[in-house]
Image (cartoon, rainbow, N blue to C red; front, side, top):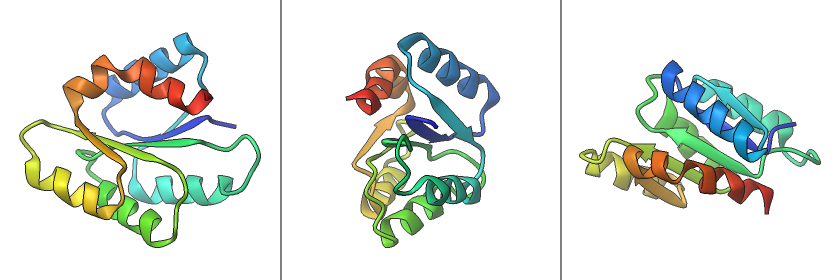
Length: 122
């Protein structure tokens, strides 16, 4: 079972996340749509060994913000960290309002990726 569940549809960035997770010893499951994130989160809800952290690329083309809103409305207990382009101030505010505990620019997320992934191990 995955320690971290991530919604990301950029194949190059997905590869970077997967490799970083492998290097730090964190099990990562990626999905490419908001619907797939909701399904994976529901399937693992309350399951021992299920994800302890959700990562969401707000620039994913298929329902990223809507998935966060749905998770929040359903009482999702998992922390959600979202990332996006630094110029998307309005989208960042909408993500915070939707229930993200942390929203950061992609550049900062990339620099801190290993530490972010390790949060799921503690």
